[in-house]
Image (cartoon, rainbow, N blue to C red; front, top):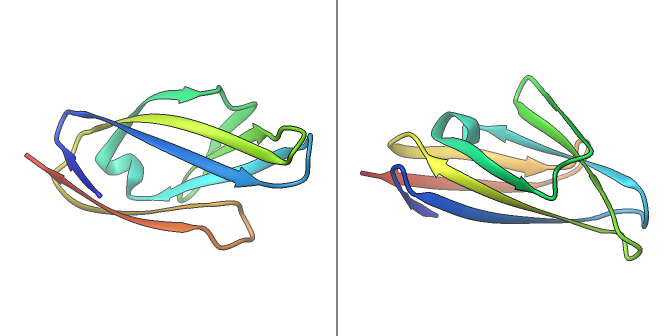
Length: 100
């Protein structure tokens, strides 16, 4: 993905889990080094820092889906490698490039 420095960028994360439960998602890697998180919608039930980034707990709906909409602002320049995953499972690897 390509981003422009200091521009706002949207990201949508969808997770499937047990219906009407809480699911944990970790944003890890260099995501927080290259970007500032400006908004999370809906607000996570709770969050905490982790050794690799930040963990967020989301509420699933009656179908077992949880959606998270993130607004990021590019703060760095160059390549940033990140991963989004539920702990204990494979996730999505991102390679993002922020240009001037």
